Amino acid sequence: MRFVDLLKTTVLLSAGAATTLAVVCVAGASRTSDDRLVMIIAAWWVAAGVVGAAVGRRAQVTPPIARALAQSKAATMMPDHRPGAVVLNRLWPLILCTILAGGLAVLAPQVPGIAAGFTIIWALAWRHQDRAVTAIEERDGVTFYVERTSPVQRIQLVRVPGLRREVPTLDGAPPPA
Image (cartoon, rainbow, N blue to C red; front, side, top):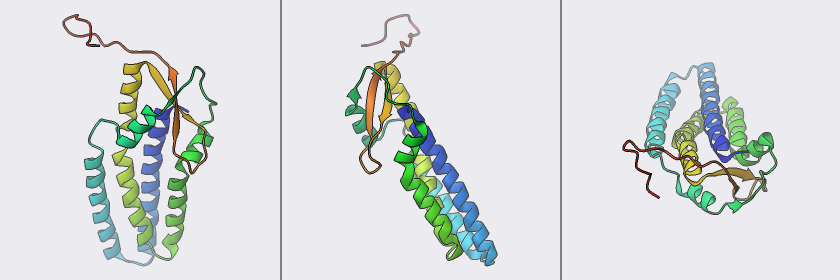
């Protein structure tokens, strides 16, 4: 699976988890007719949105992604294409936390509400990372793929030759090297 596709999937699954947890929280709070809880949790979601937007405002790769890109191994062939296995292998903590927090809504509806705030932060903080990695791929003429590893190990990438993109300048001069 391409690394940029995993980053896009992470953002979309985080946003979906936030939406699901928010619905479960509101449903649990409305079951107990706790309007005050909904207002407090809604304020937390707004604060989480502000924090996530502030953290993810830069269009540069984060240090962990930059480290993974720098430590990628060069290869001449693409690795096995198993996107479902890669997503499950890499995003199992998000899936597990979403299921656990959603399940705790029966006992305490504020738990999925708090978890929804953290998934909002996560989705907004990672929203520009795929474009930053795509820019690096186009500049260097490579494509990064996720290598299959253990779910508890650090992510490892494989660098495969790709197509380099030359961007013409307005005055016709060659771009700087």
